[in-house]
Image 1 (cartoon, rainbow, N blue to C red):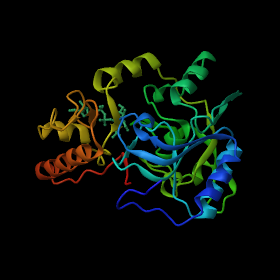
Image 2: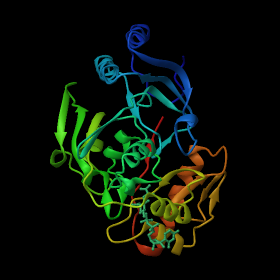
Image 3: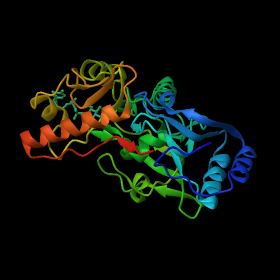
Length: 306
Ligand code: EPU
């Protein structure tokens, strides 16, 4: 496997590294196309792709990468990520197999890879409506917690009782909500890149109507198109979508990447868009919004350079 021009590959004994990975319970692949693992459908290939079957294997995989100094990136549902056209030169660790939901009195314990829609199905079947503000968000539990996803009135951080993460020393640590540093689309978990293993969510908030939330989202957001959700964070007290719209940028396109006509803070992949096209469009939108409003929009999506 030859590194692509300009990418960084540490000098490690790759056969020893892969041998250790193969000994763990999970699914190891090489040269895995990342287009299949992101909701926007963009990206080159990952040198290695491993999907552990158990939280223990996830912990051991990360410890192994740290021991070898091998670059790794945790991947949930890939709903907020933009991978480079060159792909990723290290190991992508997918949480897709780390699923499980245990309902208790007043709370629910959920593993990191559980998709939010599946979590909502389970709690709704039990007659619980307090998590329905998360309806229509395609993320995994771990990713949703890291970026404190939600709606303006409520975020997943507001429901957290505790979160189990792997700390930088490779130890499992259980954080209380107050230690997670949740703020608008931000947390200590994201800042320090702490891998989430599982979390316990409180089920005592006000009920939300799942159908109503979904209807509102379907009406205002391009949910059936390939996208990574909102591209930019809302500046305090303002709406990025409204500013992009007011700047006249709806429908603007670069190659197969286009500013959605439905919601201006979404960039949609019309089919086969390249990361470079999306990045170019992001730059244009930023410049034009700056020119119109003297506000520099901050990215909400995460761009992973190859
Ligand atoms: N607006 C426009 N034009 C547009 C889009 C929006 O004028 O093209 C206006 C709307 O009419 C509304 C205001 O801007 O008056 C705010 O729009 P919206 O209600 O759609 O909310 P938003 O601030 O754009 C936020 C979150 C969404 C979340 C919705 C739930 C951010 C960046 N976005 O959107 O989260 O789904 O609230 O109502 O915080 C995400 O984080 O990926 C995401 C989609």
